[in-house]
Length: 104
Image (cartoon, rainbow, N blue to C red; front, side):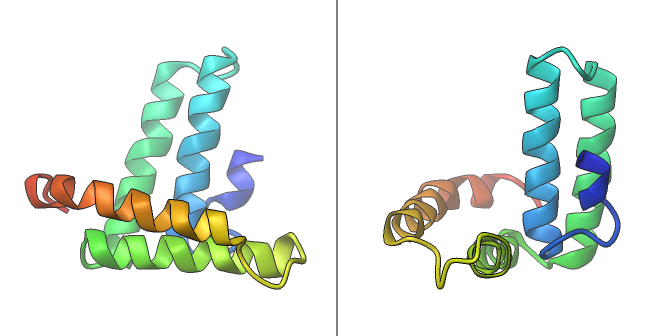
């Protein structure tokens, strides 16, 4: 399933790469992938994100947009649930200090 989100993807690069990294870590935990495969997915994902977005903020905006689109287009719901929206806002706020110390 991971390979379905590579290249063209499903939603947008931010959402697709986040999903690839999440799935690869889950697969590693289940011992379906080795650490080398996870690293390869991560390196490919970072390159794709850097080519698609100019900074952490634009990536974060696209990730929220991707989550909203997923709820509408894939889950068939009219919008992302309010609690999910609140979680996304809280995560973005918590991540901002890291953005300043981590080069894009």
